Image (tube, rainbow, N blue to C red; front, side, top):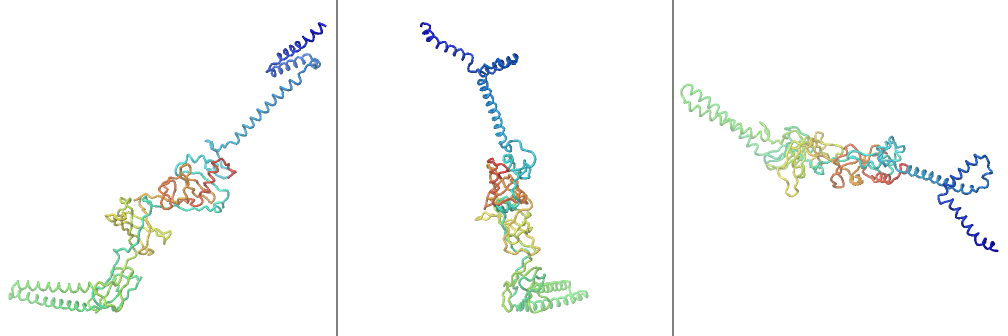
Length: 473
C-alpha cells in the first residue's frame, strides 16, 4: 500500500527528471552537435560492420531536419548570388566612366561618339566638340520635319551695315541750257549709252550771233595790229620812228590777239566751232542717259535741266553705321555688299569717305564707299547689307533662336552631317537679336544647323539620359 502510494508520488518526478536530462543532451545549437554525433555514430557503425546496431536509434527525423535546413540555406545563397548577378547585369554600364570600345550595333557609330548611348559624355564637351545622334531610318528627318540652314555672317555690332546705292557723283553730269534759246532737236534718249562729246540736243540761241560777231571783230583788230607792228618795225629800221612807237604797236598787237583767244574760248565753252547757228548740248564723258528734260520746241533759260548722264560702271554706297564701329569705319576698308533682289551675289566696295560728325538724332555715322558695277546689275536706290572683308571688325555667325538647344545650362546646336546623322555640337552663344542668336565659337560658316523641329532630336537625347537603352530609341 505504501509502495503503491510512493510510486504514484515519485513516478511523475522521475519522468520529469528524465525529460530534463534529455534536453540537457540536446541544447539550442544541437543541430550541429546532432550532425557531429550522427556522423560519429555512422563511422562507428561502419567500423562494426553491422547495420542492425543502429537500427533502434532515432537519428532519421532529427538528421533529416538539419540537412533540409542546410539545403534551404544553400538555395537561398545561390538565389542571392543569381539576384546579385542579375542586378549587376541590369546596371547602365554605358553611364559609367569607362566607355565601351567599338561601334554601337544599333546606331553604327563609335560608342565614344554616340550621344544616345553615352549621354553622360556631354558634360566634358568644350565648344566645337560634339556627340553624334543617328535617327532610326534615313527618311526619319523628313518625316518629322527637320529643317537645316547655314548660319548668317554679321559684324561685331550685331547686324550688317545698311547702305543705299547712289550714282557716283564723280562720274555724274547734269546738263543744262548754257544760253537762253529754243530747243531745235533732241538726239539723246533715256537709257542710251553715249560717248564722250556726243551731241544730245541742239539749241538755237540769239546770243550765239553776238559771240561770233565778237570773234570776228577781235580777229580784225588782231590783223590790223599785226600790220601796224610790221610798219613800225620798218620805220624804226630806217630811223624814221622811235623804238617807243614800235614797242607800243607790239603791245596793242598782243591785246588784239588776247581778245581773239577769249572770243574763241567763249565759243568753245558752249561747244561752238567756227561755224553753225545752233548750240549743241554734248555728253562730257561716256555713260548712260539716266534723265531727260529736253523737249523739241521748248524755250529754255540758262540753267534749265536738259539731261543727266551717269557712268554706271562705278556707283556709290551710302552707309549708316553705329557708333561702336567708329574706330573700324575708316577710308580704305573693304566691304562685301549683298542685296535681297540679287540673291547669291556679292559686290566688292571700298570706303573712301567718313562723315566727321555723328548724326545728333540717330547717333549713326555716315560713310561712302565706291562699289563696282561692271556688269550693270546694280541700280541707284537699291538697299543692301555690307560686311567687312579685311578684318576691320570681328564677324560672328547667327542662327535662328529655335536652333539653339540649352542642356544643363550649356548651349548646343544640332549640326547636320548626313540625312540621318547629326552632331550635337557644344557652342558659345552670344547676343540674341531679332529672332537670331550669335554663335561666338564652335560653328563654321559652311555647316548646316537644324533650325526647325530640333526639339525632336533633343527629346531623344533626354530620353536616353533617363535610362532608356539603345533598343528603346
